[in-house]
Length: 227
Image (tube, rainbow, N blue to C red; front, side, top):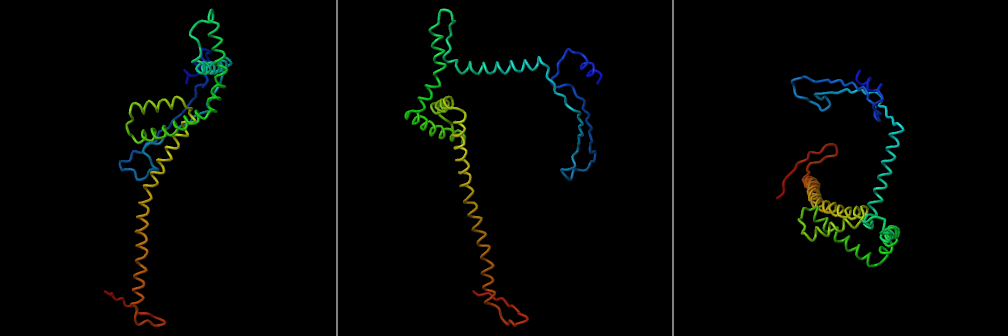
C-alpha cells in the first residue's frame, strides 16, 4: 500500500487505469468426506474491490486520436496500394497522375463490371463451386490442388459478407442432413408407441367378450383365453 501511495504521488506515470486496492478472502472446506452437492464447493473466494478509476490525460487523449488517424491512413494506403508507383514523384509525374486517376475511378469501373451479365454469371458459378468445395472441406474430404486453388481464389475475390452468405447455405445443408437422420429414428419410436397403445384395446375387447355373471350392482369378471 505504501509503494502504491508513493507511486500515485509521483508524476512519473500517467495511469489510464489507476492502482486499486482489493481484498480476497478464502474459505476452504476441509471435510474428509466427498462432496454431496455442487452447491457446496471445496474452495470459496470472497473478493471485494473498491472503485476502479479510469482517467485520461490530454497527452494520452491526443495519442489515442493520432493512433486512430494513423489506422485510417494505413487502411487507405492498403486500398490503393496496387496502383501506387514505386518511383519517386520527382521526374515521374505521369505515373503519379495515373495513380491519382486510377484511385478515383476504380470504384466506377467496379460498378460497371458488376452490372454486366458476364459478371453475374461468373459470380453464380463461383457461388455454386464454393458451396460444393466448402461442403467437402467441412466433411473432411481432401481437396485436390486445383480445388484448393479455386477455393482460395474465390475467398480472395469476394467480400466477407458474400462469403458469409455462402457458408450459411452450407451450414443449412448440414442441418437438414442431421434432421433427415433423426426422422427415421422418431418414426420407429412412434411405431412402437402405437403398438403399445393398441395392446390395451385388444385386451379390453377380449375381456369384454369374456365377461360372465355380471349384475347391476356387482360384476364378477372372469377372463378366459381363446385359441
